[in-house]
Amino acid sequence: MIVEQIKRWIVEEGKRPGDKLPHEKELIRIFSAGRGTVREALKSLEVQGLIINMPGADGGAVLSEVPYGRAMHLLRNYFHSRTVTFAQVYAVRKFVEPEVAASAVGHLSERDFEQLQASIKTCQCSDRDRHLQRKAQRTAELDFHDIIARACPNPLMSFIGRFLNDVLRDLVVLSAENFTRHGDFLAQNCRYHASVTDALRKEDAEAVRALMHEHMIDAESYMTELDAQIEGTWLGPPRMREEGASMLPSNT
Image (cartoon, rainbow, N blue to C red; front, top):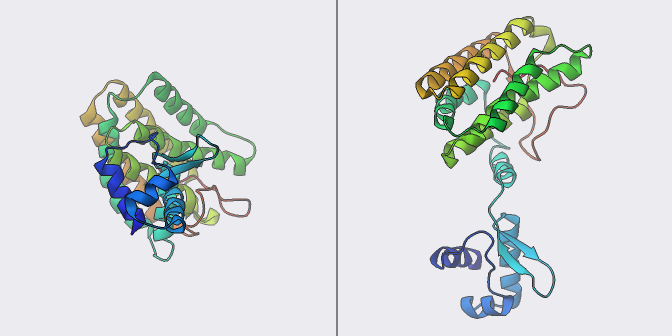
């Protein structure tokens, strides 16, 4: 109850990230609660990522902007006991990715474009170490979409886009023996990424939307053909699969 009262008070007082909450004694007075209750409430808010407790005489509870990683972790907890299929991920991604990309038009910096090109170059390269090459390419393919999502001015669409990328980054494992069209698969990704980048550079939102939609449909068809499987756990931070798991590139 005190946690919710503090949240309501923060909104009513117009407090923003970086602002300090009143000291403990003042919080006890404002909310008519005991010291132990207030301290537990502050700990709960800190776990949620809403405040940071700063040490020292001039410290105290400081409002924080909830980081993306913290929100992602909570969502992963939600899906821990729920089965999510690859088809379900793409059912959402086909709608989200084109709009995220179209919304990012005009909001990408020159540094963003350099990173998009670097991602494409990584996907085109060939390395003697097949395992490391595929890990790098898988990461680069998803990084491409993350760069665009971060530039999207709509915070909700941006978050959903990045979340879907993390789902793929963390959970998609493809069976190596089924991955007989790796070259075609990778080449298609590179072609679409290059075309999307060109349309983004020209600030042609309609072309970006159309290309990304085609890309998602193509990606879904490859995943269906390759009998992709989602497996793993939603708990813990996003990670790349370690040695022993098949590290074929996720189709992005």
